[in-house]
Image (cartoon, rainbow, N blue to C red; front, side, top):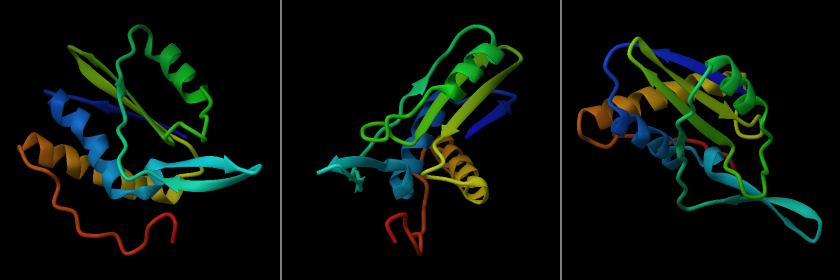
Length: 138
């Protein structure tokens, strides 16, 4: 599930790099892989995980299409990929989520949390999360 966000104005790239890590810390679904044991897949929620922000160049239509269609290997890949292209007139942030970790309803809360994490990091602090009442394995 690709989500492209056009960003305008000055961008705090270090804060934007930290925000997805905060999102992973808060949401177990985004740091879950599916290992196989005796031919049966099972969830493995990683204690710690990081997501790199890829920095594509070139035509946004081309790289967003490629990123959106690139398959996930759920035995090792986190179900979230991030891409950022910056420019003088604006920026493009692409989030690609695997449907195993998110659906149409959950994207709203994930994007709100990403925004809150970016705002906190831009202000020089970590986000002040309250514990989620339910996590992915629940």
